[in-house]
Amino acid sequence: MPELAEVEYYRKRWNPALGRTIQAVLVHERAKVFRGTDVNAIRSALTGATLLSSAAAAKQMIFRFSGGGWLGIHLGMSGELRAEPAGYAPQKHDHLVLVTDATTLVFTDPRMFGKIEFTRGEAPPAWWTQLAPPILSTVFTVETVAAFLRRRARSPIKAVLLMQERFPGIGNWMADEVLWRAAIHPKKPAGQLTPKEIRALHRELRWVCQHALATIGKTLADPPKTWLFPHRWENGGLCPKTKKPLMRAEIGGRTTCWSPARQKLR
DNA sequence: TCCTATGTTGTATG
DNA sequence: ACATACAACATAGG
Image 1: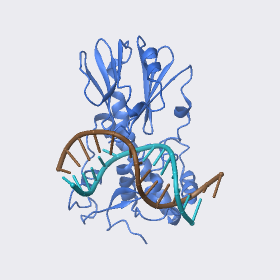
Image 2 (image 1 turned 30 degrees about the vertical axis):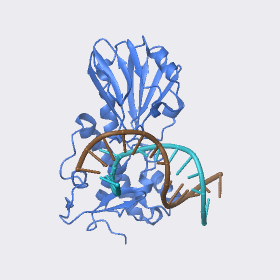
Image 3 (image 1 turned 90 degrees about the horizontal axis):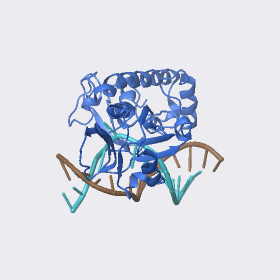
């Protein structure tokens, strides 16, 4: 499920363990989510360490532990974080479990497209500090967007919005939500957007990020019916703005939903 | 049985 | 070197 706001929500689920000491680290050693990382290093560094703080950006989370441990988590397609009561028995897809005296922290991921990273050091790891500037930051400008669209001129705008190097945290549903609000057809080549459309795109990107964080980021509740979101998977779903039928098709390799009545190719 | 899934990456092709 | 398109990854659920 996780895009920008869902990731922020799941990050906070581990807050009950802030300031607490990890008594045991339980792992599924062979799980694909540990590809490229040293499971033994996680175990030895985190056992006895204290969870100090956490942060989320784009679709990434980072957890800082005493002793200089940095645990990075990407939730992939089906990952989740939970805090379970003390004494929780790990289930089939719980690949990383951190036990404290008060609560048990769980990373679960059936499809294992998610990823666990671990590094030690004073400073946070490069993959974290080098994430693209957030859409809600001041350096995310209309001109930045325009320049990126010029370089990806022949790709459908829908596919371009999924590129994390420029639109960190945007995923399939957020991209559709943004294009719907900006009244841009998802199949339109990125290089063919008018200056007015690029301004609308920039504006709606920020709007959707801000409001998704303010709602989903706090409770994981679905956005209101005035959004495209609750209608996108309904059969026979209607556009909340035009009340006309929504359309679904694969664009850029992902199922895309749009409102033909307000998003036109030309 | 077959299809789908809120993601990323490696690889082939132009 | 860069841009583009798409299969592959692994599992569950309709």
